[in-house]
Length: 388
Ligand SMILES: Cc1cc2nc3c(=O)[nH]c(=O)nc-3n(C[C@H](O)[C@H](O)[C@H](O)COP(=O)(O)OP(=O)(O)OC[C@H]3O[C@@H](n4cnc5c(N)ncnc54)[C@H](O)[C@@H]3O)c2cc1C
Image 1 (tube, protein in one colour):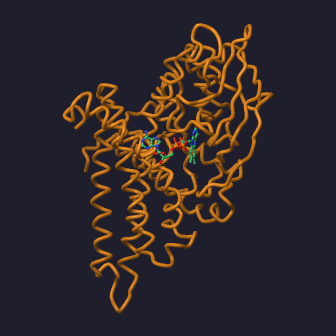
Image 2 (spheres, rainbow, N blue to C red):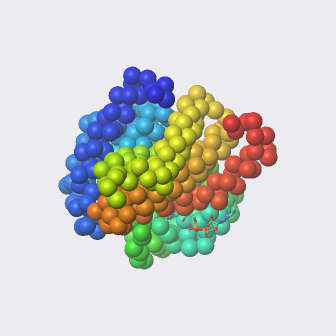
Image 3 (spheres, helix red, strand yellow):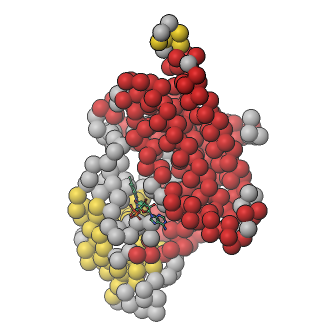
């Protein structure tokens, strides 16, 4: 099905094996507040490396496993079947980085992240700059051989486990003043402190704190690419990550559909399985149909990227995949809770956890509203035929 090659099927099977090994740990992790002991997290990462699914988006010459876009989707789809971010240990370091990193940065950041020895976090969003990244107020001032960084960043995912942060700011002096730049900030570095760690809907060991960067001094060699390049990297990351969000939503929906179908077959009400009631059958059928459509769209987008699609077309198609798959997964999760009845509201059921966890897929990496803006802009510019 879906025209997967032998190699695709092998990658998919290994990723599925990884997910199946983690699923039994979910309930204990949920009830422990999402926290995973560091040695357990390290063991999961080692297992992903052993299975050849870690850093699938990084070329082999930089230490990754260099998989095709479709294979990356197949892996992240399985990651999405697991709740509580347990499978995030199968990391995807920034694939745009090798092309712009200096040899020193490749040695200090690219190779160690591809090996699983270091991990990153992204400090871009601010209190008054989320959808509109250009509204950031963080500053980077050149001072001799250094830059001095200032800003307060929100929702910095995985800050509590990261070894370094990508910090995005606007340059406050020099020929590129007012333009964006991105920096590596090793953690810990003097001047970087957690303001607070808010609680979120999901129960993850990966926190999303508000982090203050106060007169953080970094050597000029910590600049990523050139001054003025900052937004370019953000777009590269969005394109990749939106496709991976779509992939994980497919996995979440697949898990929900499998569990609700089984439950609907076994749960008897009024002397017959609830699957025989039209209202329940409709929820099953609609969920399956929408998953099939979202999967076809996501796989096709991945194939197009690997075949060298125009970057603007790929950008809009990744937005379409994220928009459709995340909204599909949200509908499927809502139905799954309903099919499970009272059990669907219990944290020990995957339906309840995925109902909470999948909600953010419509928000982060660009909200659904922002994806619609991107898609419609490209339709007007290039004509609908260019996108599908
Ligand atoms: C759990 C979590 C983890 C995150 N992790 C990170 C991270 O690691 N690093 C990071 O930098 N950021 C991170 N984010 C931030 C995330 O990317 C932003 O929350 C998201 O882009 C939306 O920005 P905002 O919250 O400021 O909402 P706003 O931009 O204030 O949007 C509010 C509402 O207005 C709508 N809106 C905005 N613009 C338009 C428009 N043009 N047309 C129509 N409607 C519009 C939005 O869709 C939304 O409904 C994370 C967020 C969450 C919730």
